[in-house]
Image 1 (tube, helix red, strand yellow):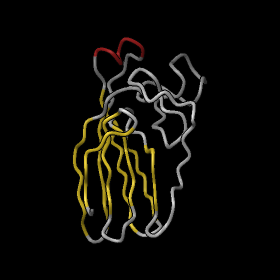
Image 2 (cartoon, rainbow, N blue to C red; image 1 turned 90 degrees about the vertical axis):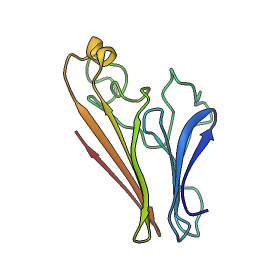
Image 3 (cartoon, rainbow, N blue to C red; image 1 turned 60 degrees about the vertical axis):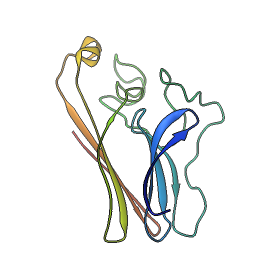
Image 4 (cartoon, rainbow, N blue to C red; image 1 turned 120 degrees about the vertical axis):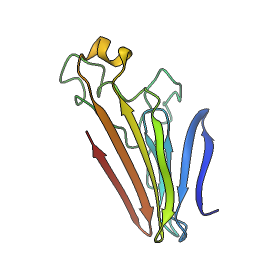
Length: 139
């Protein structure tokens, strides 16, 4: 399969992206968390803890989380901030010029402003091809 597929990842909805050369990644809607990356012709490179709960109220342990707006417990907010357990919106997914890419977005709402009273928009782009995993976050 080349392209994009909506999948179930341990009970969480996710997007799997696959480049024409076979490189692939899986990103959950829950936290826009990267939970898998396999380079073309390779094996899994992303570690996930066997203790991860894969539940909508809990953060995923391991993988590549979105940390915003604070790291760890260096502030008054939940561990690594307020976006790890929020459902993100898929903006776009595509395969173009031999690369597979997915873009997610999260923004402030009443729930986030209850714990952090600031407006924001965060976009996360994940792209794979060959032995490359590119991650870009814009706030």
